[in-house]
Image (spheres, each protein chain N blue to C red):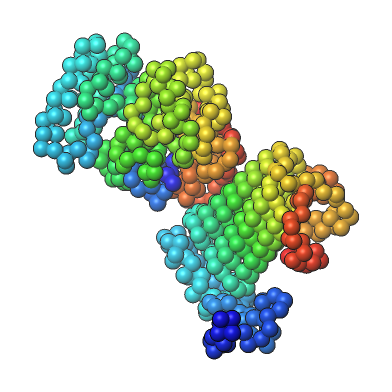
Length: 312
Length: 280
């Protein structure tokens, strides 16, 4: 089933606690998917690139005596490979043993850097961006938020996902959001099933795109990345995606300064939108949006094939 | 062998009378009053009022509280702070004036038979699904599958509704003050749907019967849905029905368009006389 949610503040600067707001919305959607929770939130750009990556799955820690040594080796290799390509690591954080956040200064080819790092066994880059923080892990929003200290995250906008695994495993690799590799600051969350996943995946792989999971939702992120690589703007890429993707879906995309939603031509997956003067909030169910308001609000359901993009 | 079967069934108490006509006519005899009331329906007095503050209640607690009040004979209940919760106000099988002061989530007021419900907000997906009788009036917008499979009563949304409105509708009336999404009236079988604004693609797809009125533009008619001819009776009916709920159409009811099923299913219309459809 899965639940998705998004929020964008238009005039509030970057000091809104969207971490707390997103957690409240995602926790209200827990019944739609308790397997994993993910956030893509956009905060202050301090000029550095933020790289979120994992060096193992959470489950790996329980299954092997050698994993701790392997993790240390992998982190050391990540550090050396980044430095080999000219990236300067200016800040390191490790919310968990397997999940890491680096701030780097780098002016080279980001795709090359991502490919070089991901070539290390067990290492996957979750996101790269200037203002994007992409966090995903197993458990509900309260657990993930506590684990990664998200409840005091200030920013302008964000999207999130609560996952009920149907197409692929319960692991971080298959959790949403998906980063639109190799584009900085572009992330996608999706609720639905895509029925032309494998056909389109093969075509995109032949064009040089990489897929890190077997989750059909990743196709949307890769497709958007492909279109933006061809010079399309977000809204055009999303409109084209409604024809390109087969199946039932509602998805959200966030970039550095935009938030977009798209719905399939059957309007088969839910989405409720609140559009205020200063804030737009979207969720699979209104019960999530109501966590942000203690009074009545006007909301609506977008129609079939509808694409909307908001700017902050 | 046939003789043996007949004897056996008679020993079991079966075949005591010749079956003929509709079995419902036998079971719902006016002399058997227990057949005319529902299990867990209540005699209520609409002059008795009560208010529930649902702010910290689960959907199950809200429904139990409504039921407990009805068992005490309360016939006018207001629920404050429903906070868009799902599955609230369901399974009410008696008269009741029920008001929600704010929005409901999914499956609100489903499986009801008799209450008059007023929702001073919006509703999520599948509002009033399988409704049998009564009225449900929503001041705001509604989600998809609005009034799916309703069999009777009036279901009114003053705003716009999502996709698949009134799919499998088997009776009753659905009124939408604004727009409706794709596949509205899909496999509709009886009843009427009045859409004052625009309708999305595949309107009335695979409908067997029933009537759809649209005041705005229709993006595309579905398979088997064809334009019908508006009569003076239609105009009078629409005027009367919309006046009941204070809903206006952009161009007046005379300019509304009527859509019906373009096919006649084998033996379908022979099951019940067409006059009976007017009652449903």
